[in-house]
Every structure is written in C-alpha cells, then in structure tokens.
Length: 287
Image 1 (cartoon, rainbow, N blue to C red):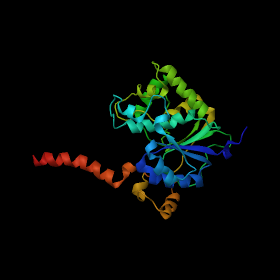
Image 2: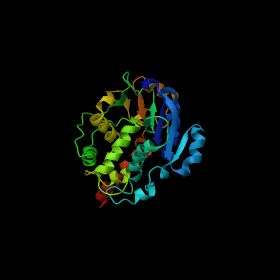
Image 3: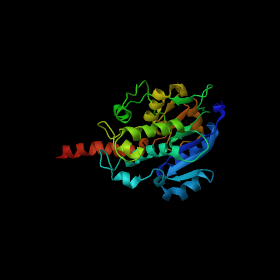
Image 4: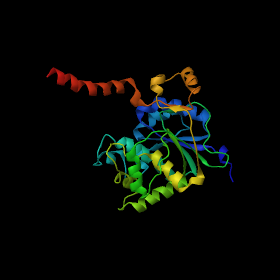
C-alpha cells in the first residue's frame, strides 16, 4: 500500500476578493505546515490579475463559472428559495469545492481548506493505517441533517460535527456520493442543482459540504476514516486583528493548531450588525 502519510496534497479553496489578503497569509502557512503539492484557488475570472499578483505564479487559479455545468453564480442568484439572492455565494462556494473532484489530476485525494483559515502547526491528514483523518467539531445545525436525510434517504447518525474549516477528500468516494444524489433525486439536472432543489429546514443555511461528506464517509466507508480532535478557533479577528502579525500567529500557535479570521467577525461587520439591531429601536422610541 502506498504510504499515504507522506502523500503531498492538492489544496483547494474558494475565495472572494475581500479575503485575498488573509488568503496570502494562509497560502504561506499551508506551504510551511501542510503536506503541500499545489494550491488551487477557485474565484471569479475578474479576480485573476489581483490574485496572481498577490499569490504568485505557482498558484492555480480556476474560473468559478466554469466548474459546474449549467451553474454560475449569476444563475444561482436567480434561484427562488429562502435567503436568495444573498445566500447564493455561500452555497456556490461549497458546491465549487465538491466540483474539484472532476478536475483531471493524478491523485485520488485532495484537501479542502477555507481561505480565511491559517494553519499554525504541522498537520497530517492520514494515520499510520492510511485512513483519512477528519477533524471533529461541536457545531450543530439540524437543517444540515434534514437535507442529508432527503438526499440519501437515510439517517446521518450524527455523533459530532465535521465543520472544522477543512476536510480531506477521497475523490472516488465523493464521486460515488454525488452519483447517489443524482440517482436519489428526481429530474435530469446534475448533482449541484439537485442539492439546491432538495434543501430542507427552516433557516437560510440548509446545506454543509463538510457535514455532508464527513457523515457520508463515516456511514458508508467507516474503514477509510479516523477522527481526531484538534485545538482551533474561528475567532482570530477577536483574538488578534483582521491582519495578524507573525508574532501574533506564534502566540496563537501555543494554543491552537489553526485559526480562522472570518470577515464577518471584523469591526465593520459587527458595527453594521449592531446598527441593524439598534436603529429600529431608536426610531420606535422616537415615535
């Protein structure tokens, strides 16, 4: 058996222009701490010049609108469902990371890694038996699992979450999973549209690529997976700043294996959220 512990991985991320600055830091640390083959960044073609200038020529840029047949961001914005068009980008980036499984590369594995998440310590993604290592988490959104049940006609048997800013993928298993979605869901559209047309639940966020693939592997290919708990945080902006220094990252590494610097945690977004809450109350009091 090939020694998977030493396998270098293609790393896949989807990134908006506003997250490019943190992605440049993420890319640098991925090269340092992850068994790294090449970084593939899925983004809008209009972003290519800025991304190439910032990230360098060794990063592969992929046009997001060419990844999934018949699906573009503009078409998804026209999707008539709760939360749209605002939620289109959030769903689209998840489907794009799945779509990489159909790209022509030599290896059967790749690593999905969130653009705003910075690795702080050396990380491996296979154990000594060659099993994929999945990092567990505690997040819980019941709508994700209602959608899972509809897509696969079976219970996910949730024990923990797989939403941990990254996930290791075996292409052959992911393709099998997407083929099953196409088989289980009526209509002639591809797997991506069938996911979108079979969302279940009451919230805007009703599908998770991490929960879906992680639980599929755990249920259908248990011998291929091992599970681990790592110390990590999604509160990097609050712990340091939007653009952390090297010394701040070293300090974080003493406690965490990786940290996310989510733009939604930035000052302007927090201020905007507070304004939405307090302005109606202010006008109500004034009247």
